[in-house]
Image (cartoon, rainbow, N blue to C red):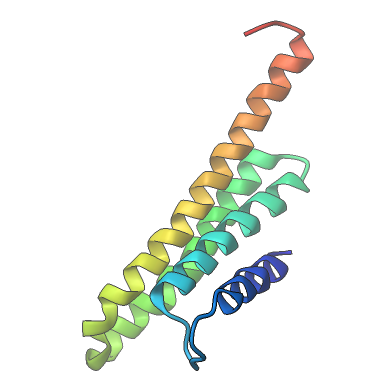
Length: 121
């Protein structure tokens, strides 16, 4: 599902009339990272029997998938260090997508709890 959303974002940027390029820009990559972080965390947690713990674990995994290669690259390849400013928005967007997914999971659990109790808010 995450791959489908990622391809939809890429297609939307291509339909936006941007010039052909071999590498996507920071904005496109950040939007794709946000959508990927959101869908990867949300859909995995929603389809599990315990959404909140699974969501937290999946969020940590998807953030590690973004951070660890970048940290390794910046630590070992000195010529890449000036490009760190380009990589930070992508990691931040991915984290923001995951945090939004965790918020939606928590909100839906709270609303479900109110519906089960039958009480008004």
